[in-house]
Length: 302
Image (cartoon, rainbow, N blue to C red; front, side, top):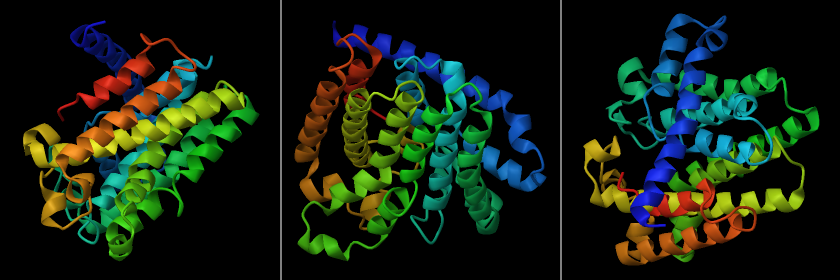
């Protein structure tokens, strides 16, 4: 299949999952708003509805559907992943973290609502990301939901997203560790993408061989995504990125480009893409959405 035809097919599948997710995000507003102070809910929903690629919920839904769990039944967990991801973005933009006033082409949460409410909106989304799928995944077998939520919870904490943010903020060990930037990416970005894929699959299957293939796929997709993100940070405009370009270099952040150079980083992205495809081809044919998505991701321009 030619790359243009493949891209059209992938975009069609992406839009299918995104539309399911966006419809559910709108429909769940009343449930998520119950008992929440208005200004807090406004701040939470501002960032939830700010757009974005919806990569994590899309991958969660796609994996679940391929493991005999319906898209409808997987939506609460997919929303949990997007709430968790959004919480990390709100906190990441804070002045004490990466200090960015733009996110997804709009003012970041603290720039619009102030630091206090932004911190609380991030905290609230983090808590709700656990509560919501546990309370609303009513058609999932308890053992499968428990396994999925265990995968979900492991991505959040000190050995996951929080740990990755710490490595990103305190980079002194990088002087004697040439793979430090890869550890940052693995925890800060890759962990959540891998968890979205693996937990989505766990909603429908308890087969460890299948889950291992999804785990490997998510690991390499997450790595490729971050490497490409680092490349785009130095090669794209603010309009394309939806955030401030060149911010990493300005702040002296460690990225795959700053450590390895743009050419080597591009080769690393290609290698991670091949490994992701190899892992998922153990389960699905080459013309399936998940294998094709790896090449689509490699070719993305924003």
